[in-house]
Structures are given as C-alpha cells and as structure tokens.
Length: 292
Length: 299
Image (tube, rainbow over all chains, first blue to last red):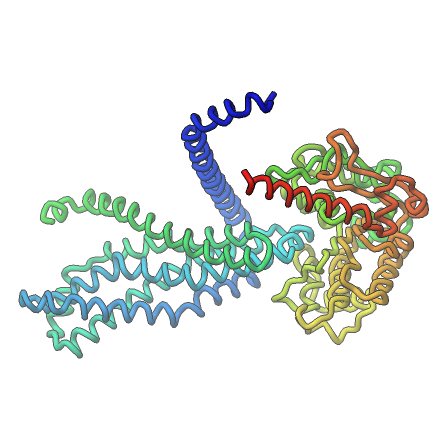
C-alpha cells in the first residue's frame, strides 16, 4: 500500500524504470497496430471469400449489373482515354531528346509502346480508376452503411454482398482490363501523333520498330495485370464502404482510404506480377531471355 | 401453402405450416450478450414475446435497444446467448435459411433507411421483386394498397426519398415493411423527430396494423405517448455503464399502466422525464474531472 513514507521510493523506482515503461508502451502501441492491420487483412480476406462465393453461386440481376457497368465503364471512358493519350505524348516528349542524340529517334515508337502496354497504361489507368471509381464506390456504400440502407437490405432478406458488392466487383474485373486496352490504344495513338506529326519521326520506321519490339505477350502482361488491379480496386473500395465509420467524416475517410489502399495494392501487385510474368516469359522463351 | 394461405391462416388465428405451436413464444431471447470491441452493450438479456403481442422497449439513448432489435432479426451477431424465432436458433441457420426467416419480419428503421437511388414505388416494391415473380401490374397494385394503408396517396410513387418530409419517409418505410405481409414488425424509434400530430398518426398506424394484420410487434421508443397507447407490454433497459456487475439490465418488464406506477427510481425518473439527479451527477463528474486536471497540473 502506498504511504507518504514510501512515496519517494516509489517515485525513484518509477524514475529508474521509466525507459523500460516507455519501451513497453512503444511495444504495446506497435503490437496494437500490428493486430489492427492483421485484423483488417483477415476481414478483407473473408470479405473476398464471401464475394467469390456469391459470385459463383448466383449471378446478380440485370438491374444491378447494368448501372454498375455504366458507372464503372461508360462514365470512365473519357478520363481513361485522356489519361492514355497524354501518357503517350508525354513519353514521346521525354524520350525524344535522348534518342535523337544517339540518332535512334525512329526507335521511339518501340520504347513508347512497350512502356505503355506493359507498365504505364495498366498502372496509370488503374490509378485513375481507383480515384474515380474506388472512392465513389466507397463513399456510396459508406453512406448506405451510415444511413442503415445496408441493414435494410439484409432485413428484407437480400444479401448485401450479393446485391451491392458482386455487381461492382464483376464490373471492375471485366471493365478495368477493357479500359486499360482503351488507355493503351489512346496512348499508342497519342505517342505516334506527337512523334510523327510534331517531332517529324519517320512514319514507316516508327511503326516497323514498334511492331518488331512489342509482341502479343507484352500486351497480355498489361491486360493480365489490370485484371488483378480491377479486382483489388473493387474489393478494397467495397470493403472500405461496408466498414465505414459513422458520420460524414467516416464516409470521407472511407473514400480516402479506398483510394490509398487501392493505390498501394496496385503498386505491390505490379511489382509481384511483373516478377512472376517475367519468370514465365523467360521460361517460355529462354532464347529471348539470353539475348537480353 | 401459398403466401395468401399464410395470411388467411394468420388472420384467422390458426397456426400456419412450419410455425411452432401457439403456446411457444414466437421470439425468445436467451441470455443475450452483445459486445463491440471492448464495449459491452447488452448483458444477459432474456425475454420472450408471444405471438400477437405488442412489446415496447424503452430506455435511455445508448442502452442497447436498437442492438437488441437488430439481434432479434439477426443483423447483429450475439457475443453469447441465443435468439430463437419460431423455435429456430438464428445463430445456427445457414444464410439461405436466415433469409427465409427474415422475410417473415418487417423492419421500420429509425430514419426509414429508404434507398436514395430508388423512387417510393421502387422502394416499396423492392422486397417483392427480390423474392416473388409478380407481374408489374400486381406490384403496382400492392404498392398502391400499402401506400393507402399508411395514408399516403399514389401521387408520391415517382418521388425520391429526398423529396419527402420526415413523416412521409417514415410512412413509406412502414409501407415497405408491410409489403411482404410480415408476421413480426420491428419499429426502431418510429416517432423520433416527428411533430405531435404525425407522432399520433404513426401510433395509430402501428395500432391499426396490429389489429388488422394480427402481427407481433416490437417497438423501440422514447415517446411516452406511444408507451401509453400502443403496447401490451413494456420492457425497460438500462445502460450497462451505469449498472453494477451483478445488476440485471432489464429494470422493468410489465404492463404500460404498471410502468407509470413503478417504484424503482430509475424507471420513474425516465417515464416522468426528470433529469435533476442526472444533472447533479454530471456536475459532480465535471467537478471531479477539473479537480483531477488541476492536481495533475500542480504535480
């Protein structure tokens, strides 16, 4: 029991152990953070499993699919086309000077198109869509959570994951690769337009080098990656919306987190899928790997 | 047995196929405990609701009334304890089976929870389109009937929920809950935020629905007028934060007349709306907190 006599000893003891207490607090905070992260990851994994189970057990109705496809696909077309076109043109602007110094400006098409279809097209289109679609979906579902509309769905015997998540997820995995192809195409057109029309690069050689350098597997790599990016955007955005905190602030936070988490996931997936697909490439075409 | 046969049997007071015997309570909550993170909301709640009864659940904000209501329909998973509906333990049901049980309920949400993107007609028709293959004409007829039952005209069917007043939204919420001809109606604060006239309209609608459709109703409310007029039985919950570890959370379970005579101070203060003791307690807490901060600053 603490008394007036032993209090100073207690203070001394506390002073002596202060660094340990601080370290213990720091460790406890870190532990809490790790637990929160693992819980969120586990929850996302379960959410993904439930979504896949509903996707394969019963397809969503047409009246839920069409608005999702319209919102995610049709309304994203202008912004994706614009992004693709400008990436192509900017690549031409940035690469031209270096290539010209070496007298290789006719190879510009090869570099621009390769960078576009393998990396920049899928990643930048997905980033743009994570901002446009991911945030919007998280905010919409978050508002539905806050205003008890998701509970209302469940109370009427409709599974909210089947009704709200599956159509959005399906639209993301079908349309984000399609939009990536659109971004690639517009980027190729934009790069070619800038190089041939404004930088005066020879038309014939520009396309011949592009055709020789970029093959179908490169195009496949970009589209394959975008399939995963689409799935990640759909799942993360819906999961954030479903787990939205109360109030306007909660909805705002859900929208921001949906974008940030999607963006980080896109970058991580890009790295790991890039390594995986390169390994596959080297396995399928070992001669090409040796030349490189 | 068709849906209409179910309705007729219920209206005649006969048990329908798949329903347990009339002696068995329709809803039974057994030792329910609900906890969110570290916060305990409900502790050892046990109550049973016989078929046809209208039960009011009252209590201070944050005492777990809505959580109890949501646990009854399976929207909140209990930390421990069981909720039985018509003899079925909700926690043991598959998703499909739970869905089948849920469509026997109608839930009127506090803020109506109408789908913003749908019109009034689409909101009311929503559960019908999800679970039945009615033609458009049949659905239009049901929507018109339900709107009529809650005293709304067909003029508003094309309006979006944002274009309606609070009272109209609540009535559309009730019309949607009635669309499936439920056996149980759950009302979450149906009169909150309404003027006295609209409050009485909603109270009368609850009574009329009970009398005409012979439904079992659970009404979560703070409104004393609703308690006087609507229920057969009242249960009062108390916030766990204000209770000792061995005190029961249900402070009162009895008739609406008896609650106004109840000698428990916490119950009588609530029904009379007397806040004097609570204010003094809040003041004392505030003083204690300022004293503590002053001591910390001095140290």
